[in-house]
Each structure stands twice: as C-alpha cells, then as structure tokens.
Image (cartoon, rainbow, N blue to C red; front, side, top):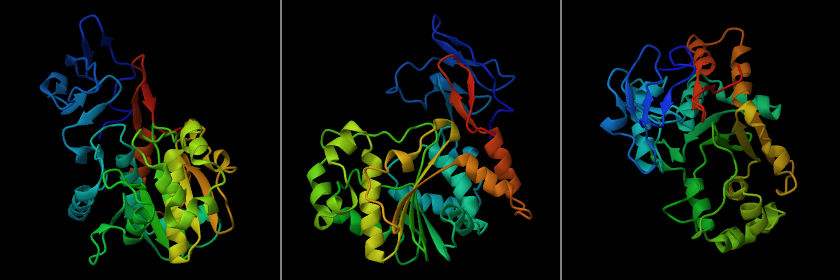
Length: 325
C-alpha cells in the first residue's frame, strides 16, 4: 500500500506537454494529464505499469482495490462482495476513497471487539452488544440485503429507489442506534438535486419532519447545504423511534477540516436526551486505539497505516497527509 513513505513529496505536472509524472518514489514514468473527469481513468493513457496505478492530477487509483485495503482475507472479501452487490458507489481503489479508510478502520474495530468501547467513549456510557452495518447492508443470513429498519424508513419517506439515503455505517446497539457519516476529503455540505422531492421528506412518516427538525427544508437543505445530514437525522430518528432506542448521528471528519456538525446543526435539529448529534475525528479514533494498553496484535498495522495515509496532491502538486498525526 502506497503512503507517505513511498510517494514523492511533490510531483511534476507539465501542462505544456500535457503529461504528469508517476507519484511513486524512484519511478520516472510519465502519463498523459487527465483534463476531464469524464475521461475514464482506467485507460492505458493514465496507467503506470511499474507501480500498477492509474494516475490523475490530484490522486491515483490502484488496479486492484484490495491493494488499498488492510483487511482482505477470504471472509473480508466475501463480505465486501455481498456489500458491493447493493452499494450505490464503489471507489475503494482510489487513494482518496473514504470508503477504503472506513473499511480499514471500522472492520478492525468490529473484529477486535472494540466497536462498543469506541462508541461508549463518545457517549460516556456502555452501549452493550453491537452489530455493524456497512453502507446499508445487513449480513444476517435471514436478510443479506438492506437493513430492514432502514428499508422501512426509506419507504416511510418515499425515497427514490435510485438514490436512497445510505449511511456509511449503522451501529445497532443495546443502548442506542448510531448512524455514522464518515468523510475524508469531502465536506458535509450537500444540496438536493433538481429532481429531489422535498414534499416527501416533509410529509413522510406522519409528518415526522416537524417533530425532529426546527428549520424549513428550503433553508436547511438548500441555503445551509445540509441535505445529506438532514436526511440522516430524519430517517435515523424515525428508525430509532420504531426500535424504541435513543438515536445518535455521528459526524466523523479529519481534524483539519474543522467541521463541527454538533455545533453547526444544534439550532436546526430538535435534540432531546434520546436524540443527539456527535462530532468526532479520525485522529480521535487513532488516539483511542493508541491508548489501549494491551491492544490486539493487528492494531499496530492500522495505526501505522493511519500515520502513513495520504489524501492526494494539491493544485501545486504537493502531497497531503490524510491525518494530523
């Protein structure tokens, strides 16, 4: 896996010749400069055969997405294949993929029995037994598809089948329901598309919107650009109420993004002791894992990965570290 220790601090971008050099240390390969996002990245024109990557101006993509993943034994690959059948988007091969980082970090928390303790570190109290749902997919043998409670919430708000709400992670615990939205380089600012149906969100779930949101859809989703977070709060609180559990919407970002969703949304969402917004960072997760005195053997590779992780190149061709570690 490529990171700070194997990538050039600065890459040369020659706009005159229309070429860019491979970001890997010791490689002199130059490929065509991709000028339009509509151009397929998986093309020989952008391919470095030496390092098995496809190169764009700000990032690169592996030939095989599993080169970007830490956990990839047979059970992991099988689970990812099942998840992938229903996932809306799969860009795990890309260096800047938030999904790849999410898998690398949370698959470890799950399999090491640390998911519950980490969630407890956010709430200040034990959460009991927990199960983790990746990108809406429930792997229980009787389901093997969209988590049933999420499916009911989508139906309650008449969501479009081609673009439904898909939280990155859902942790269903004895003490509450956690919906986790993980961001790497992207922000939490999103707006509805032209064909969105705001009336369905406002009227759905027996007008649930007015019970849990204090701000108009137009202001919150469009002016404030919090469309995605609005949907997760709306559907998540509805789902939790039907499970008779407290709800926690968790915003997970990089420390350097300085996004504090708990503060930004405080005046817009109707919070109660049973409905909370939590903000945390990837660096906080690193600190949580690093502080464990007798941690699992495979925690150290994850910590090394997070310290070495990069987040593409800026407009001047300078390498960016993913996390402030």
